[in-house]
Image 1 (cartoon, rainbow, N blue to C red):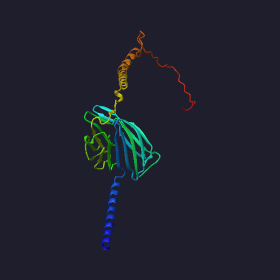
Image 2: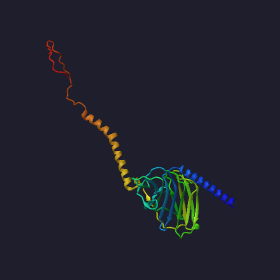
Image 3: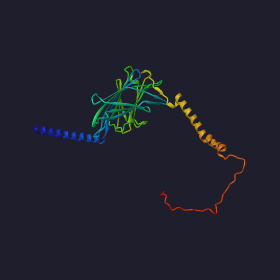
Image 4: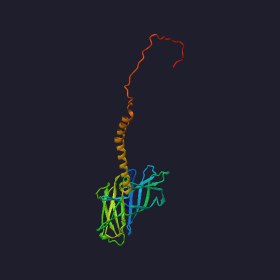
Length: 313
């Protein structure tokens, strides 16, 4: 009996040692990435009115670096053939570490919303979890065969590796789950690599990347619902300023004004200089030929010198 107890104790100690070694190896492997995202967890709810409610839980690891916070980029412009459309971003709420409010500044430039999250007067380090909530309007795509959610859930703008990326999509309960088509893509922007898994549950679809996402790599999902599953909430067509009536008018005026200035400077002005010289630049005609008169020096002139010093110059 004592022998059995000793053997069990030795086995237990050996097991604990092996587990300790494995944990240390996993920790060392994780630390090798330095600054990173440990887990990127996204929940997308497709509402019946066509809006999308998105919740992102980002477990960001600053390692030993001191940072103010993170930046999240959300593309708001879609390309459909030769046209572009803009989706609406609203109801943005950000918290960190179990609901603590954190300052966030939102700036939109060239069709991308940048969320600058963090207190500029405070630095943080180590692991922190950020929860980003927002609503998207016009993010669905519609056709005669499907209502499609094509969403870049984990964007390619991150400059740090993402060790784990998962996305779940919840759709309206009235939708028949057996008629849903799904796809997912990993890698850089435009990649067709499918290193990801898809799990279909009751009323929900889960996506998971099979590998670590390197900097500038993301996870894109596609969920095709039967047509008519959600209301049509179309995005607003984006028209560049140079294609608007005011933009076209200003461009036309600029072209006309530039042409007039070019003609005046390179054609009219040189001709005017020649004409002005021809009219005013020549000597007037007095009716007689000009002659030169010269008086020679006087032979008997007396020359006197003064030696008085009148000062240096």
